Image (cartoon, rainbow, N blue to C red; front, side, top):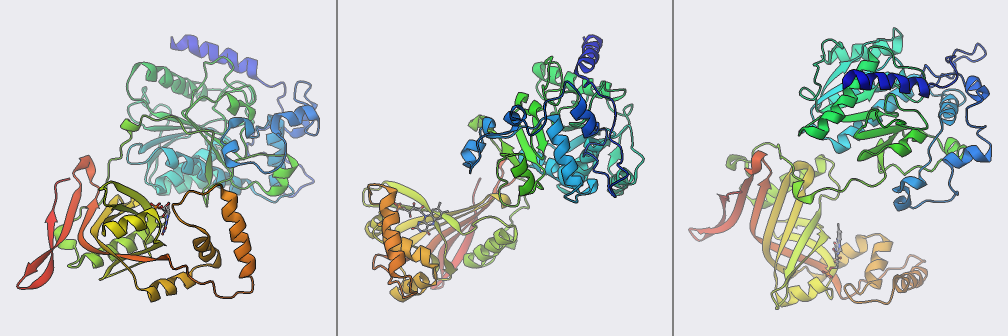
Length: 541
Ligand SMILES: Cc1cc2nc3c(=O)[nH]c(=O)nc-3n(C[C@H](O)[C@H](O)[C@H](O)COP(=O)(O)O)c2cc1C
């Protein structure tokens, strides 16, 4: 099977070879030659003069590849592959040249950002607790450099990377990357060192052999390495577990524009497109397509009419297309966290809560004060919703809301309620149960006026939990009030708006542990010699 497939691959590469052979060279007129990110790239002039190459970038035919109509794009539309721009090889090369020419980027910078994007994309999907052993297979060019950088970042993210870099490029940039990896004691494996069956020793295989500028036939040992990755996919069809393959920008051996033309090439599980996806990415059928390279300046995006999904927050990567359908019943995390022991607990549960809350803040968790409030009215039917904790002390947990809302009505019928905090990043949960009272009017008044004007107006406008004819009603009313109070005069707090305080009668601290043997420590009040103290009990998980 294998030799036949290999022969086929060789044919494939010959067919795919682009009709040019010159490689990029330094231009004597420029201080820093605008080399492509992928330094084996043929010069732009060679690409442009090639008769088989797509027409000039300014021609409508060319634009059709990468353009959709302009204007703002909803992120839901950008989830759809059809709304994302795809670049031809020529366009990708031209963007690179612009970045490294007039825009002043150096190849080192772009490589660092590209490698970081690859590492963060991997970390988004494949957590180190489950996928720790990474083999980065790096080619001789800049795609290989991206792989070396990614390996370094993965090390710092908690993975155990290994590197196979059979054709070390003797240039300061690559020497530096190798030194950095060696200083982290990352093992370099020769092709001979690699086990014949890659499936046993690695969880993730990073294919960083060839990028968008590759042309020609992969030479040894890369032809064999590509075959091993192809073989793994076939192996995966028949066996249970196989490492995942992550390709950097282009699955090695694919045609940059036409993709896996014989359907016998590498089938990556994840593709991390850099700067913008290349046309071959349209043929990617794996579950995880990410975009990285968050350095495209608006001038480039405009010039090439690039439509790319917005990067969330400070992330270096963004998913393209929909996440794969998952079997919900198969989703499970094995929590690995420090044990929660009785002797570590504070005597008072509020002090313990503050300690954990501070940990959640320090861990950078978003909205650590978001909590689920559950209430029941006299019908005994529970209902839950999120609210924000706005204060906590010995008297209890405070939040603000509309007293005439559904929760408000339920609390007026039954003051017993529960709160739940879940701090996912720390594998922690806190349950609080007790009875609820309204806070004093002064306290509500004070908090109301500490809020931004928009929130104050929103509270005035919203008759929370009532049916309204449409969203415009709210917006009209809001606008009117905004004008009315545009002089900065005091917005009176509505009578029906204010705070509640839940006085805890039971608080449980839950810390996730491996194999579902979680720690649960519960505080409940106890009378000892006429004094109320908190008793701690351990509960079975
Ligand atoms: C993260 C988050 C925080 C929220 N915080 C509050 C809040 O502090 N007060 C509030 O009245 N509603 C808050 N809401 C909205 C409530 O979940 C809910 O929609 C609203 O209070 C009406 O609930 P009810 O109809 O059960 O009374 C929040 C929602 C979310 C998702």
